[in-house]
Amino acid sequence: MKKTLLTKAALEHAALVELRALHGCECVTELTIHHDPDPFGVANWTIATVSRASVDPATDERTHRNVARGVAATQKKLREIYNLRLD
Image 1 (cartoon, helix red, strand yellow):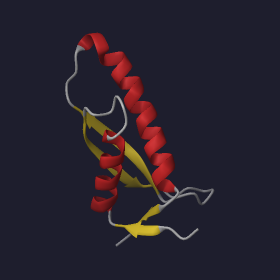
Image 2 (cartoon, one colour; image 1 turned 180 degrees about the vertical axis):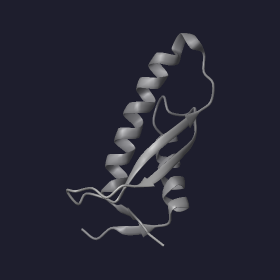
Image 3 (cartoon, helix red, strand yellow; image 1 turned 90 degrees about the vertical axis):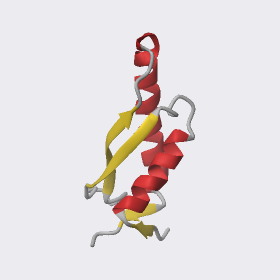
């Protein structure tokens, strides 16, 4: 399957929209995409950092787990359809 090439900004936006749509990930405010050539050829990028708004300390651990799962799911889904355009 041919992948769509996106700029870093466009890919970060797409990933943020996808991630924030997941339950428990609404608090994510920013993420960063880094160029990371996959030796297996799956994709040429990875979600490197995620920022999130402050949350209630009583729910912080659960929120952290939700966001970690959300990042993994978002990356898996989007790596199948997008590659990072290298300029």
